Image: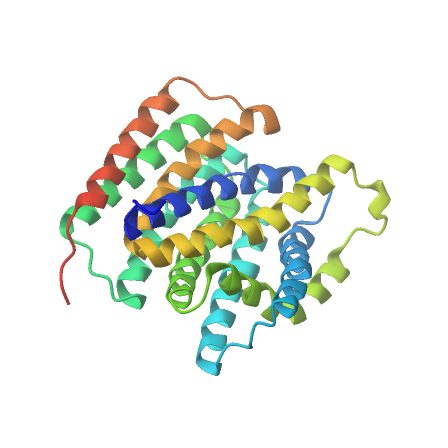
Length: 294
């Protein structure tokens, strides 16, 4: 690890994060088969907070200053409430493969927000590579999903991507001043006054009637997608730069499509590997592209 540059280490941490996030849609799809989507979206954040709050107290982490609390609250609304609930609703209407169409757009949203919020100035070559990678992933996902699904579900996914991309960019700015695990910990804790009442109100009347498979999927969404994955992701964005590391998320769709076979029963073909190779090529180009000053 000592021989890696800060940017390379950031890319590696970002990749670990997206591997964790790749299980989000498959797990959410299973969870909403037996649980209310609002419960899944809010409950996974409350579950993450149940781990985060004792950790913050045990390590005696100080409450962030007011300006940081504002950024944490805003990014918390986007990542802790917006993205989980919107994707939970979408997964009641659309297959996981269709959801990957829009997940592939998150890096572009993150990079665009990062260019303004983190004061990064990617070069035209970077943007060309990012747009090419996004086009490849969207074309692949549409081919894999077949006919476009329900318009309402598409709107939920679009809103989820906008929430995630902007939330990632804001979190990355905060993660430059505090550890990534602490950023996500404060985000889920700050949102407790919202997530706990919503979780209790929309929770199942008889939890024992919900199958173990559905509870395990809910647990993954809460502990890994909502919490542990952000340890790596926030740190990666802060170390490698928002615009550049965010492009690693272009690989998330392909990791997800490897998961949906054994988990959700969806299949992929050899075209997956060709498309994945094309996306990797765009990431390499984007990584080597220079940045503009100013």
